[in-house]
Structure formats: C-alpha cells, structure tokens
Image (cartoon, rainbow, N blue to C red; front, top):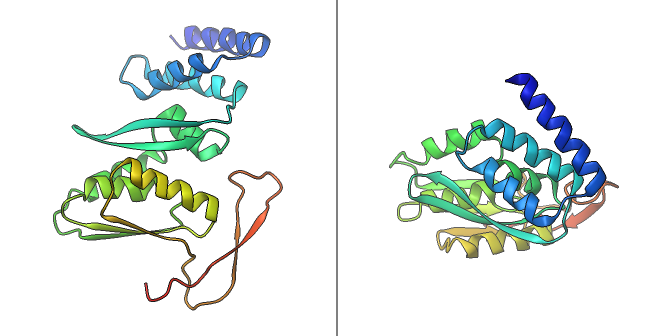
Length: 198
C-alpha cells in the first residue's frame, strides 16, 4: 500500500509540474482532504502537492466541521500560509483544535480571550461553540488581519465575539508587530497597543 501511495504521489507531482493545476482541481482535492473519504492521507498529500503548485490570490470561503451539527465558515486568503493549510487540511493545529473543542463543552466556561487572534480561527470556533452561554474577546493589532477577523465573525453571526484592534501587553506603549504571514521580507507594522480598559 505504501508503494502504491508513493507511486501515485510521484505521478501526481510530475503531472502538477508539467501541466499546472486548475482552481477546480485544487478545490476538489481540498474538499476530499477535509472529508472522511478514504484514504484521507492520500487526499491530504494530493491537496498539499496541488497547493504547492497553485497559489491563487482569491479569497475562499470554507465550512469546517467542529462537532456534529456545528461548523464554522472562514474566509481564507490562499496566499497566506496558515489560511492555505486550513483550506487544504480542514484544520489548524489539530491537537490544539481537538482540545479546545472538548474544553468548550464545559458549561462553566463563560469567557475566552484570544490574544493575537489573526483571522479568528480559534476566536470564531469559540464563538460558535459558546454561542448561547459565553463570550469571546479577540485581540488582533494588524489592521488588514483585523479586517479578516471581523469578516469571519460576521460570516458566523458571532454576536458573542468582540474584536479589539490592538495589541495586549503589561502597559500601554507603542508596539511593532512582525508579520511573516503575507510578506516574505519580514515587513513590520506599527500597531495600536492600548485597548482602553479591556
């Protein structure tokens, strides 16, 4: 079985290098990698190879299952490495995600703070799972990433999520946020650092 997977992987890699990958093929492979369709590992590998060959610049909306009958929708910019991984594999940090999904089932949990929320993967997940019994405070200082956080909160009707466009620290002061997410040259952004009483 391993040699069959290696052969298929080699053929797929050669095909992708010579022909390029149409967007529909990447979408189909990404969907299969998120589904329960066997063999899941083969679909994940194919999706990863396709993702290496094709990096579209458009925003993709993806529905991610959290628990039976509960899911979140995220708008993902496939130029962003983290978003592309979520798109291709259907999750981000699988062990952390599984732990948090279990943790959010605890009826005593009322508030979740997401410091450095990025596009809101964990914040939106918490807002969906805590919808009627808890709230989420998400902090993201980089303006264009903060806008994506707001979009993802709106897509999930997350009225229990409050997003703050600032950094969190031990005292109010100017801050620099480094973003390697989109920019290979390690571009730095001056960001608001005081959240006014939060």
